[in-house]
Length: 246
Length: 318
Ligand SMILES: Cc1cc2nc3c(=O)[nH]c(=O)nc-3n(C[C@H](O)[C@H](O)[C@H](O)COP(=O)(O)OP(=O)(O)OC[C@H]3O[C@@H](n4cnc5c(N)ncnc54)[C@H](O)[C@@H]3O)c2cc1C
Image 1: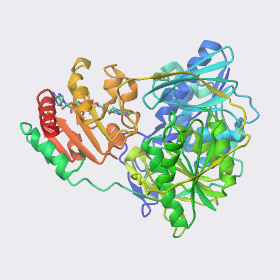
Image 2: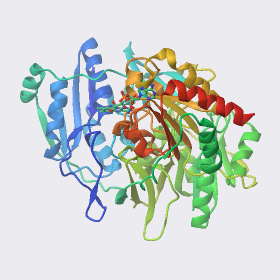
Image 3: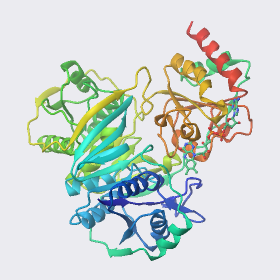
């Protein structure tokens, strides 16, 4: 089983978000970067579990500069066999997906896994784009994935329930909660990761189709209005008359 | 040139988010001085189709014989309709299907994509769309530089507007490719309101002490017509199902009304819920960080406050 897992580098979840250069750039000062949790906890770990149950390889792919190497090494420490970095500053989703599709197109991966979205741009874009570029089926927001007899059985949360889907042949899948449990790399994994291959590949030329012009922080809340815990009729009145929420 | 909206039917009818997308499409079309078309598929009654007309579509392209969960087929369907009406801007909802279809379409048509837009685009000095980023901790203004554009609209961003229009229906034929994904089973949860598009949400955290105490939360939710949600640890320990987990690593929601009961308000929790229009926090700890993000707060014990609130609501409803 040949599995490709896409990894993105994102700011840690506790990061205080700030912008510089006239609100055109994310302020990376003092920011701790991590593997996008959906990529790591769900896509990567499920990929590893499937490999362990069946034999095969898990390769990770990241589009980015050398600054992404630490998070790639962490994925190798968690258990990926080898890693690919397409040497290009991350631009828009289209050009990122294009790089991944160009790499994957002649490598006959059985599946390409990634997280349902990144926690920075919340795009949910790369998986569907890669699938279209490679003419593969795409299953988004999957919470379970099992392989048997060349068929993948996949469970997704749908509004008000779950749906079980079946796919034959290669596919692209974006992973959501439920798919697997986070794995903490152990000392042996960290040591082994140092000698695992991290292949840096030059990028192909592609024009982005979108760009971020500026950022804004949400307006500050006016301040909380406290209501006496013994006077819930007052809360109901406020929600009805003032907030018009009920 | 025209604007095309992908209207995805859910079991034969259009959800509120689909009508929001249609209204959004009609407004974009108006701003660009053109018409709004819609494309749909499968078994959809005339009465449902008429809703698209009422929400601003002038033509509805319908592939009645197509029934599929395969985003590959759906993107071919939308591309076929886009070619038929010469659409430059294509819209859909940022829901489960939209998240699979919009990026495929973007790649297929080489059309720049903005997902999760929360406002109408502006067109002076480039085609610009706003969207939440960093899980709601900020917003970004994205510029789409390609001639063709795809936008998915965050549910609950603009209200659907019934303008009383009617749409002409055109049967859409074409080769939408082979179905590579099949549905084996659909399991429905009964009696609960789906979280991502709920207008009101009652959410509770570790402060509730145990799963046996959720009865009062469910009662409050059903009285309000609200969906129930929870913080991450509550889902992780198995007090509540995973699909109720909201926050940065769970479901991101933006209801009109969000109750946070016994939830401390950690940054990762706030990230997924701070798009809510009105936030009410009930917590014993006056220093709980959630109060800073709240509109209304009650410092008190949930086990006393929630039953009182339920009584007050019952009295209010009469
Ligand atoms: C990478 C990462 C991602 C994360 N993603 C998420 C996420 O998506 N969503 C999420 O929710 N969390 C997330 N977390 C966890 C988050 O940091 C917090 O730990 C979590 O939100 C706390 O849950 P809680 O508020 O229910 O529990 P606690 O922090 O234990 O808070 C319980 C609250 O209940 C109050 N309380 C106690 N008793 C009562 C009572 N009788 N009546 C009223 N109030 C009472 C307490 O004062 C306290 O404020 C993430 C963490 C990490 C590291």
